[in-house]
Image 1: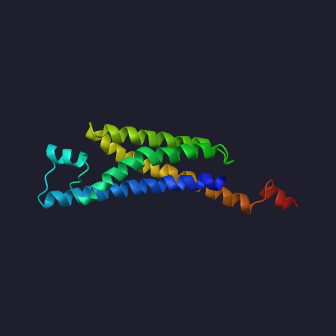
Image 2 (image 1 turned 90 degrees about the vertical axis):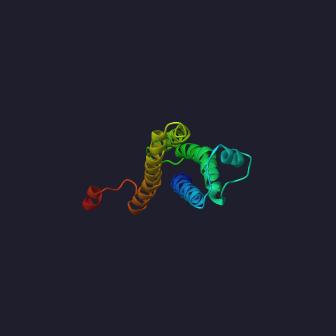
Image 3 (image 1 turned 90 degrees about the horizontal axis):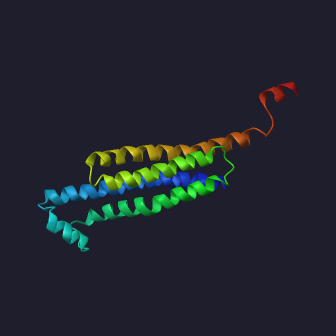
Amino acid sequence: MRQVFRTLAYVIAVGVIFQAAVMVYAVAGLGIYIEEGGVVDAAAMEQAQAGQPMFPEEIGFMLHGMNGMMVMPVLALLLLIASFFSRVRGAWKWALGVLVLVALQIVLGLAGHSVSFLGALHGVNALILFSVALYTGWRVASRGRATREEPVGSSAGERLSS
């Protein structure tokens, strides 16, 4: 179960990378669309909501929203559940931290549509979430290596006295 916990933590970190990639893809496409004479107005937004994308890269916005609102929360919940069975000291605390950051990310992402400053915090929180998820997986891996290298119950003092 340690491996499942570790893998889920790393998958969440990769999910944050995916989120950034599809958002930049969509924003770059929007920039090209506007440079080529496209206009983003109420009519264009209605067209997009009706299922007719303004530009091909618009799918990036949809992928960002779906992954952030559906996939990432499920992964964070699975990480929390796995933490209780992983036998890693403090795993539930780190998993809960990841879950809280994912929840905050959703709130900031939704609120950013109304208050642009919160949208900026959405980006900052993504970096924090990435770091915490990466560290959560890394600490399991590093503790696993330490356990394999040193037999349980042995210490430097015991080795010297024998």
